Image (cartoon, rainbow, N blue to C red):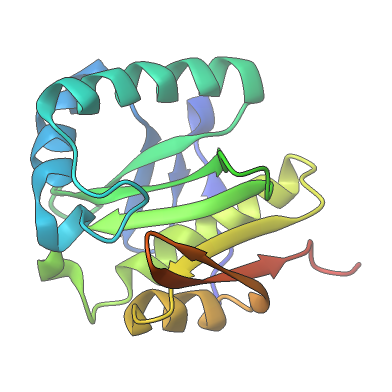
Length: 175
C-alpha cells in the first residue's frame, strides 16, 4: 500500500490521483456528477439539482474552513480528468464523521474509489479523528466492498427510506 502524501493547501496526491479541496471552479463538474443517477443516486438524498449542488459546494468550502477537512474533487493525475469526489463529512444523523465517495460509473473496477477513500481516511486520522464511519445501502455491494477493503468493519445497521443501511467504522492504525 502506498501512503498518500499531503500536498500544499490540504490537497493529497496518491499514486494515480490528485485530491483537491472543492472550490468554485469545480462547480460545473459537481453539477454534472450530482445530477447523474448512476454516479450519485445511491448517495444520501440521491441526485441533486444544479442549485442544490451549488449550495453544497458553498457548505463544503465553509466546512473546510471550520473543520480543516472536508470534500475533495478527485482527478486522475496523468490526464487531469475529473473523476468524482471523496471526503470526510459530519453525518446529519449524529453517527460521526463519515468517509464518502462518488465517482463516475466509468471509474468502476479501476480501484479509484478505494485509492481516494483510503487517502481521505489517512488524512482524517492524521488530523486526529479517533473514529471514522461510513454508511452504505445493504444492496450496494460495490461500496461495501470498498469499505471492507479499507479495513472498515460493520458496526451497526438502520433503515432509511425503506432500505437497510449498514454502518462501518475505522479507527486510527495502532502505533
